[in-house]
Image 1 (tube, rainbow, N blue to C red):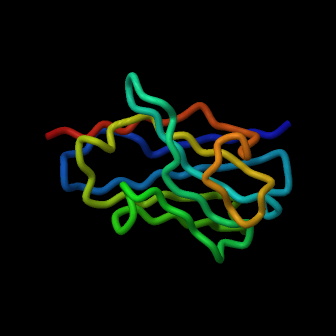
Image 2: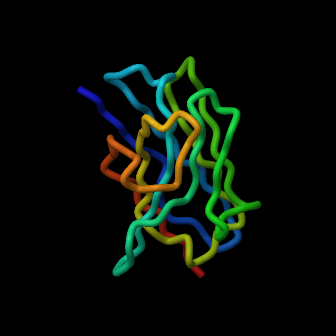
Length: 124
């Protein structure tokens, strides 16, 4: 059984930083691309960042490019999202997910297993 668990969410002031982590188990982690998505209240879930199965390719939404960094540690079966210069628009529940599209993808239907999410709140 595949299990995806996020951690690291919380309350942070605007301009601050936060690091999210995602641990995946139950399948060959190294054979999957990974991604972070987020959903703000009243909005659709949107792509944030993705990373290929070997970590050599990263994808970012325009809204986070230059501020967020996605990385993966194959030995630890974890994926992280370093979030810098946070602003109020980054407030959302952040989800980690796996994808069999090895190159990485920003298409929601191409992600198969999802975590329960971790909440990030950015205060003004």
